[in-house]
Image (cartoon, rainbow, N blue to C red; front, side):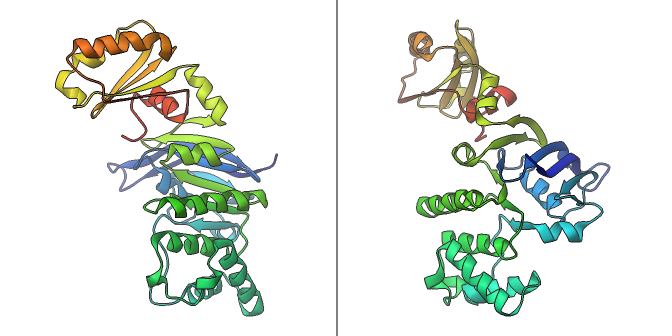
Length: 318
């Protein structure tokens, strides 16, 4: 399969030489026609990476080749083949959805009947044809995000970047956006998708890159990534009070046979175990010996959160 995006040792440091390094030598490739997700917590470097690949930020070092064009040497050509859906809403509230799309279409160089036809097409994709003449100020957060996506599609890009497109919206709007991403991909569009929601990455992605503290720490299909943690189950125990109250609880659980890794997170203890069914009685006994009661318990088979915990020693939501 043809590679359409190749990221080569991309690095961004703000205010060098002493400033914060937001992205540290990131490299990955995206195949034409796939959905590639960058999964990581807030502040991991996802948006900075997208900004560099969009030619909005100049890399401190490294490069990326988008459909044969370098982001450092041929930014104009790169911008012609990419569509960008930023995390922030890039719309004018005081004019209608159609007027917003007409404005941004002209910014992309579209005009005349071609522009009108394309605006009608992307309104249909967004499911907002019947609201086209209404001011964006009257739209819900989810509707604004759908128009935001429509803007990124106006010029028929070869690659669509989507930076956390479902943040802060209701579940119904989120479902609509995820379905739209899959429909666009089914039509052949290559998508680079960033998220801190494990469930989104699991549902959408052909391959996933896990990013943390500006470093890409693993890349692969979901099966390839979960293979990294073997067959460890994840057991979540809600013990009703912060785990820091008694630090020995975590260490005592870590000493149990069959326990691979333990992590305290607020009122929860998160345990990776070779076999949850075997370890569980000993876990319950240890919790009871510490005078704790379990308010809620959840057992999960290997997933991306377990991979993140395995690779970083902390939960994805930290």
